[in-house]
Amino acid sequence: MSKRKGMILPLVAAAMIICCGGEREVTVIAGTETTPAQAGRGMVSSAHPLATRAGIEILKAGGNAFDAAVAVAAALNVVEPMMSGVGGYGTILVYDAKGRKVRFLDSSGRVPAALNSDVFRAPTPGYEENRRGPKAVSTPGNVNAWEAMSKEYGKLEWPRLFDSAIRLAGEGFTVSEGLAGAIRSAFDGFPERAKAFYGKNGAPLNAGDPLIQKDLAATLSAIAEGGARAFYQEEIAASVDREMQSSGGFLSKADLAADKAEWWEPVHINYRDHDVYTASPPATAFPSLIRLGLMSRFDAQKLGHNSTAYLHVFAEVTKHAFWCRLAYAGDPGVKPPPLERLLSEAYWKEEAAKIDLDKTRPFSPPGLPPAEDSHTTHFVVADRWGNLVSATQTLGNAFGSRIMPEGTGVWLNNSLAYCTFEPKGNPMDAHAGRRKLSGDCPTIIIKNGKPWAALGTPGGHTIGQTVPQMVLNLIDFGMNIQEALAAPFISFAEPDFLMVERRIPQSVRDELAALGHNVRAVGGLTNAHGVTIEYDEEGRPLRFYGGTDPRGEGLASGY
Image (cartoon, rainbow, N blue to C red; front, side, top):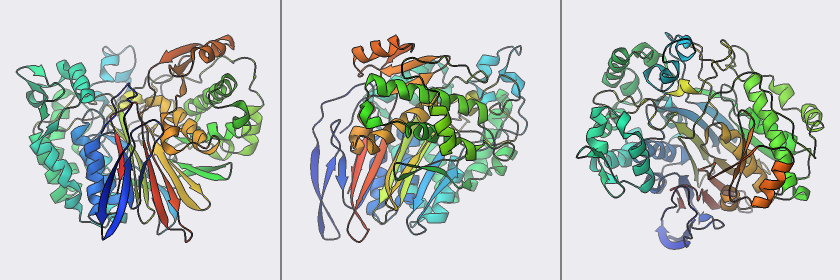
């Protein structure tokens, strides 16, 4: 069962009886805007049903959330190839139940050492095209991160985690409406080697056609057999290097060999007796916590969910946090953001007092913001031991740079397109050799000392704006995880627009406009996934609830 992008389908929740270890358990698969999936031993929610099932297979085989997360990520590379994969990057937040600790695993890699960022700025001829093609390719960090997570916390053998992905790539699967649309939109820009299997008789594949990716199956098999080294230091790396040299990219085999995944302490705040964690710098997720901190100065329940008053306050809050991201984001090894101040009660009180409840303030950026897209994926996994993984991964644009090194089946990212190139040298510029800054916002919420929720979404610069609204839905408005993800959202957009999903009534949009907001009605801002956990009297996970965004084609399911 699935939900198609851009539509809310009136699907009916289904129940299935599964026997596991002699125990008879019931799983309810999320099928409406209000009904979450339910299960007793584990839960996976991802943007594609086949990837969700790959994770469930690992959990049933005795693997934990960390094992299942690798399987889900690898499967998404196959069935959602425009969104993420081994040629991409991302941000992973985990909860280690044994260590009782939230950790952030950065898989965003570093900017190539030989990069000249002037190629992305005027007056360089073709500077805008350079932001989309081979020059925008940065070091892919995903495979190193998957291996780091597996080595640190996994239970199953590494090769087992790739079984589903390799099978799906080698034997094929049926193309969905969403994937067919993505292929159709990008097909003319594909290299011939990609057109050979993304197309048929010279035309792009249609929904219902099989997609078989033999080269990608071989790449995933090599990674399964040889670990991350097979990608970063052996023949795959050599193929990437040759492609970059021939196409004029900056990424080199030396950049690949030097890449490593890095564990960081996450950042968090206490919001109404809930500890909300997200990725720390070098990720740029901290503005999501600024938004929650500022909202803590208001009575959200009294304002009313998605009322004009509530949305006006959040719009003013989110604009300020957007300004903070542009002003303060940076590589923590060079110039860390002043988080002690930005995440303090004193700062929230000071900035909240500046909000005018009767009119909006114009947005004045500290520098020109980047253009961003929403071709990203998010997934969550929870297991019976209480471990959690909340991961956002991407290629940048759809199919990344549209560069596929020969024989690999791998799309390389165009992550450098998401830097801020003006003024030159600003903290979010593309700095050669520095850490790549990611705007992903995977989130874990701790309640009464135990992990209660994990969630996240794709959406480019909207990610750090819609995720806090989901948190508010859960905490302030008492929604279940499915309701919290399905509710309509707003987001600030440069230069000074307020994007409002059309499901928010026209009367509210008109009232926001009367307050001075430059309202733009949009379809969907998110494709979110999330999980909440219920515990028994002894503090053991009792039941899992999974949510999947009705705007997408994903599936939340457990066992």
